[in-house]
Image (cartoon, rainbow, N blue to C red; front, side, top):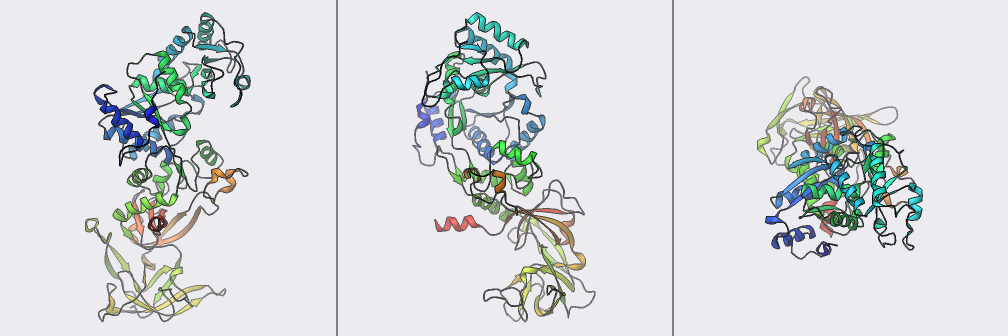
Length: 568
């Protein structure tokens, strides 16, 4: 049997991960004609892609781009009861949004006739047989990790009988689950995958592409390697969970011996991210049971959810580059993902003002009815973004947390008798407050210095605090959704004694009624910005509309990852 031990070799070149090291070696030895490199991204269309898939997308499409090769998008659509066109469409949208495109789009169902022919070939070679055992009996016969399996009583059927039964399976003569086609390999193999694995099962389900043309469908392990070979893939790159399946991948291709240049499988560590789950089964549960609002809920680790939350393709690609490609499983801190989006948005996001927890501020000596207009840049370091006019009036709103009656020593914001700067506007000094019957502050009263217009003092005096604000008469009401981590524990998958849904963070979504500056009333869905001093926000892709703004918080301004990195 052909092997590929070089897949297990450690990295041998500085700056090269093990996959690129392998590819470089193959090009040097001309393993494939003219140094050809071809990869594929092969999702099953039974759900939405998540950030773990983003890592695979960046790797497979990135390798093709880097080595001037090809990358196919192939849908492994061999389980029709769980697959839908909706998922096919969303997967294509996600790949393109990440900044990649495929050389060709294929479906495993394109090859159903050829895969069936290979199955007949194995039967005729005496390498496959039709088994009448039930699924439960097959499990019992397979043995354990310490005990060999025992052969099925149907294992020694003749090639002629097996071929007849298999063709009758295809013709629909037998009920679902009554028979399967199994490879005839070794029931005592140390690798349980090799103990006569199932190649085909009877399954009457309407297929989203082939309709009712088939009532038998090939299993993933049989389909995948043959699809790779048919397409001319050179490097079949998948996650470590498929490492045990590689032996079967090689067995199928070596046994059919139909491809002069056949692919080989290489495994890399899948992405594990703190405070989330990436199991498709668990994500489906979260959606179907209503724990989230859908696949694109901004708390979800799906690419569509991250996009709706305001993450950019550049941030996700940077994240994937930073975590790299290795063969060792590890847990990646969610703070690194947030760091990547902050770095990207800090450079590009326009700055605007919004108040999330408003308290009224009245400037007692400001002329009644007067409105100043301040020309504020959208980005202080990027003049090309231009500016906007922000109105200023006698009554404003500031953040409630920006005022304290009895401030601690290092509180540099507004307090009785203290002077602060209102961003781009004036210096103001607090003269008093008004409270309701419960003692809650309802209004802060101030005076302003008209000589500080633009936010600077002509006499050179300095203030330590600068506050953002909005004018009451011009404020735009908005719904703002503050998102936090979806789970309350760092590694929910490691908690074995509780249902993972019990670990959901009850404060993963807080909705507030905020007040925003006027320019935010008519931005388009998906528009990204920084609310000064508060964080990065995105106009919601579904619920936001001009005149009815809804913003999602992408990330706070505080960067915990940068602090972690500095300490390490």
